[in-house]
Amino acid sequence: MIDTHCHLDAGEFDADRAAVHAQAQALGVSRLVVPAVSVTGFAKTKAVVAEHSGCVAAYGIHPLYVMQAGDDDLAQLAVWLVTERPVAVGEIGLDYYAPELDPQRQASFFIGQLNLARQFDLPVLLHVRRAVDAVLRELRRVRVRGGIAHAFNGSRQQADEFIKLGFKLGFGGAMTYDGSSRIRALAASLPLSAIVLETDAPDIPPAWLNRARNTPGELPAIARCLAELRGLPVAEVIAATSENARAVLPGV
Image: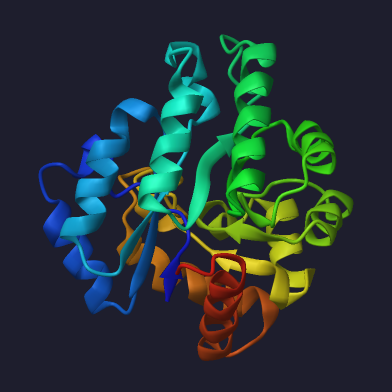
């Protein structure tokens, strides 16, 4: 199994990171994509990935961190992309949910990072909370080699637009809630070739954790949920979503 979005470098794992990683691997999660969120955290992301087998890094400036980003952070990101050659640029995107974030500053950093992804021919890991149409608009302007729309929660029409642009859609803990009717309907009806699995650990815990810390070890149960929604054997879902992840993130 491939967890296409896991913040294993987050502070929530500082006390027991090795045990969390070992548990995930024991449960069959062989690969974890660890996306950075700010330039100040790149070194930690690199160190965590180096210390834990099966982990690969992505580097980017998350929209929630653009307000504290420096004016030269895009230039620093470019250096990291050259020297480290990560599997993707990410986590990047737009977030229109948090009112304290300046949309124009978000857009400036997002477009800048899309241009870097295009320059270095890298896929992108997208944050699209309450901003799906705005993200799609920028993707049509700056064409990149695809990537993943993480924690997708848009409409079927929006999903189809991402697919046309070469993107896969990330499904994780939100899909496990009975009340998440739109997400569950999409998970059940989208082409299986368009779906990848993720945990977003330590965030977006699945229903059974009752809002406790999420971990990559929850991915097998998330895969079972997707299999149940689609009426497929879980082995088929795991094989397909892993193949999808490798197709869109060649470095995985």
